[in-house]
Image (tube, rainbow, N blue to C red):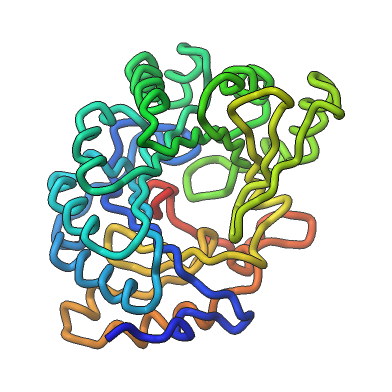
Length: 334
């Protein structure tokens, strides 16, 4: 029996119907804002959800009103049994999506179509090959670009490109990216650099919404920038250049947060539930399940006690409180 959605409403009245599942902490890139250069400490596979456990936990969330599931990593497409996972999740009454670095997309196009996975977000932090390779510490630029072009050309897919903007690294490419998507059926999102363990974040490296719009208005002219209507629970403020096919958006989680309308829950690859990307607290669903405990009250209590804004760990000037402690991005899930 489907449970009432009230179980996934927090004390601020936010209803949660969007689950992001990290399938693995591993990745075939080493982007410096996501993962330490030396990588992460590999753990025994027993510490992570099996396919059966993942599907059991996911079904519980769906029974509680989840209507959208996004698969993340690490890099989800390197998960050993990704085919089985997609087939089983494709049977659920949810909208299925994935965030990927794009390296392996070409291997799974048919699988995506068979399982109804239409929404694909691809990370691409530079249009310059040498710079991209320096950011990712790997040399897959050409392959990723070719895969992006392929899914954009395929009308089955709804494609978004994610660009993490970092001052002094790639913020000089804002106009280049907008021009790149002008004639493409794609949505571009500039994402603010966010603090996670091991990524050497500091406030000075952020590129705010205001700074991005100043650059865009100066280059294209303010009268040529259209403010698009944002969808419900959107993390993005969306824009389009007059006459363009593609659009661009800005996700400013730190300097201009969207917490009031947040509907997202994260399930890590090791079976922990995080009610906010910035939350330092987690609830262990995997070990509860293995101990034959009912995980439903664990989920509902975790959501109920979600902080009002940004995990409760940011000051009013957008600096991080000294007590803030979080995982690396790759161990949380994008």
